[in-house]
Length: 200
Image 1 (cartoon, rainbow, N blue to C red):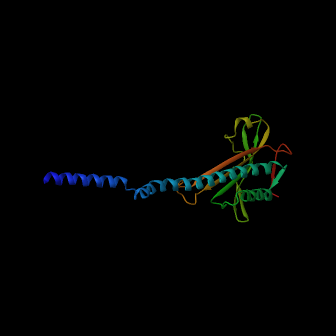
Image 2: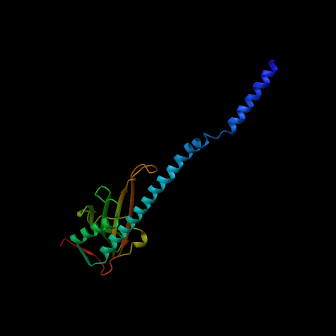
Image 3: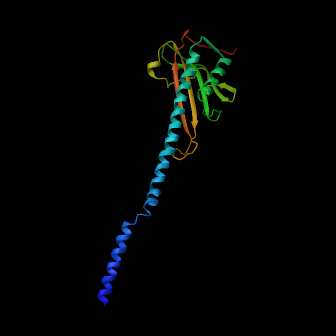
């Protein structure tokens, strides 16, 4: 009798184990728990990175445009500089541009016969809506040592633009904190040897 019960219990246990192995009702829920975080990471990560890349390209375009516009004339005025900074805001559309998110600087650099690069004039610009605040950049005669050696041609001038944008992801799923996106551009004056700054 005891042997029969033991065999019967063993048989029932095997049936339960087989039924348990075949039961897949909870499988989808388990897979869902493992897959959803990865899918969210891919989706939000793609959105954040693609947005960051798009902003970075606009930062590069802004730096090139700022330097190019200044180098096209023989002189620039305070009004010209202000308008060029405003154009940077237009290029960054549709991304938010405020004094906290974006800064611009344009400088004229004279390279002497000894290939020492010194600032002639320099201005910073920040834009909020339709108003632009222009402040003094580098001090005159500041020696700049970060210019690429290939651009250090004796007795020439360079127009140097620098743009920084502080990119903060909307969701913050993959990129948790603010990323500074920066670029710079060097151009040479086109119409004359030097671009002179005039206040009026």
